[in-house]
Length: 442
Image (cartoon, rainbow, N blue to C red; front, side, top):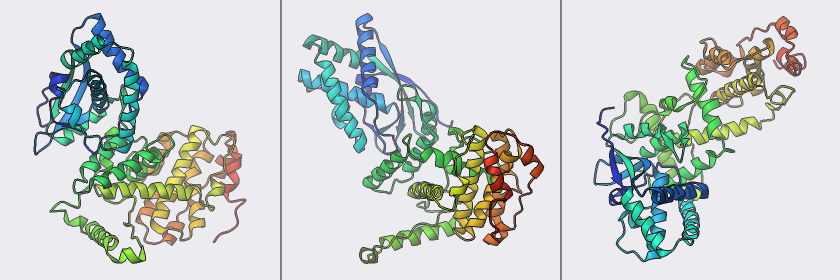
């Protein structure tokens, strides 16, 4: 790291006198009643037991290049909760001389605002059990005896490295959280509402039932790595550079990015034309999986585009025969083969759309499932090495000038290996793989 890190211990009173802000790239405030109750219990326990200084943890701040504002990079959940708690106590005690942060902190995300209201009501219920003197003592203890380790960084890239630390009581940030933060920073010219809408859509897909994790882990990350001949087994925080690129709003962009820049400008001007008020048309940016990543709003469009592609392909009638469940289809090796199949189909569709699609799907299936039907055991390492090989079907698709060039690819099948593989359930795939129940599609 280029800048010197000098942690300092600050009391809550000192820290909350600073001009702290919550940057747009932050995740919504999500501490629930359990998190809030545990924080209050921890503080009260330390106050009652010793009354000595109580260290609440660490907060990482980014010093903005202009002004005195400090962006909260790590520690947002705890900071907001302390603000809610202190505000609630101050209100009950009619305290007017309170830390500046309690009145200046701006919480813009609608989901965060809703959670603040919920936790405020919960905290007020907790405080009802305390008399006036207890409230005074607790308020004073938090401001004067509770402290945080404060780390200030002027380099935002270094600040982002701290996103890898534990957040929200032990929940580590996901790779997509880091990418959201990075690309929101690249949207400095966009309006606040645009950023909020971007965050809303991103967070909807980031839920356990959303598609954000699988689109990165099973598709975009692996395909982009495999096309470079690199391993693509697991997408972690160490690999987010795969999805960092160039910012087209910079005054100078490299010459090789001219094509992307012109497509960006043309698409933007077309969609913003007054003619769109009448005809209601919309032009989509021509994304490609292997493209140079365009930082900022185009990155979010890129991810959203392939989430829609994933949904479309998984429901496509031509793929249905190849995606049927069978006895053993949920084994790890079978899932690896299925993911590889869907990834190579996505790459083909991304380049040639529905051209000779039925034949292409069958070819993709045979290539992706070769290791599964011909071997009793399949590891992720085997799939990974198979996919990144320079002679893989993925590479043929990437370099093909037309769909017919792809269809000339030959998957050499070992029928003896297929028939001798007695792994439970695989007989359901034999006909599809060997083509014995598939009509001639030439």
